[in-house]
Image (cartoon, rainbow, N blue to C red; front, side, top):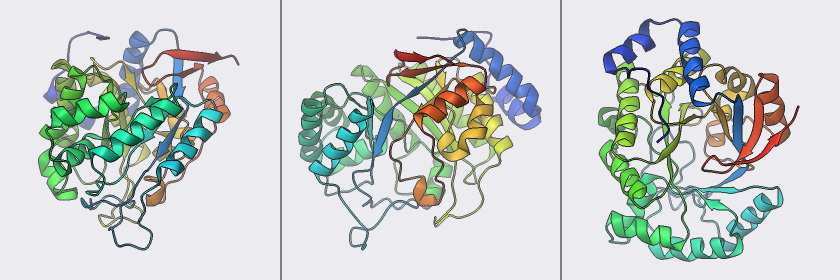
Length: 350
């Protein structure tokens, strides 16, 4: 495990940093840790596509503007051929990562995903299938009357390569019960990730903050992620982003750019056992993503040929691969395209 140890901080110290330390001081500390993890000055990205295979969801989270009821006029389930077409476009642009996520649709059970994933692997063997959140996997298991272990093993055997950390929101059940009472609790999220890790599957961890949680909840989330990794987790990266209130039932306001940078920096400081921290240009835009590279982030995530969930909340930042490379160089770093598991495919010169 790639770890930087300079004396672990604990919850009380982290809360003090978040609440009482100035933004620049926090950023400087995070940047120093980023340099220890990544002394080569390399900032990476992956060429990927989000394929949202269905928007039908029976969980109805109050912070989500994407989901639809089954009988809604704009409810959909993509056909397999539509999905293959989207992946073909990704491959045509040099893409290597497929991120399939959708609503928790009770009509889509294990047989659907097994058949789909086998065909994807057959048609596109060079694409990493980095798909299905812990909540989706739990839903598939429940509606297929299977254990989590059997569900994960069958998905892996059919072509699921790795699991993204979506649906984490805040890993505190008091918060989860407030904004998404029908979604799995934090312990079930953790259970899926640890079981996946035991099967040798890489994973990522995320956090959506700014939906009304307390500072203590943000701290608890970070430490629970760190503890999951200590217990044998396979997180390759951590990705914090801000709640987007547009078109949602929950409403409210989004966190400020200062809030985002402080939480990002604190993530780099606390998560001493996770090698990569991603900047969320999808929710923050290119300028803030550039600043984030000086606050602990070393990765810009995916180029996202397609993204629908955040866009449904009215947040639609776009960035081409060349714009991403230019941003990285402009911030004083070396730019490189990577795989899902952070192997370098190509470095781009200035």
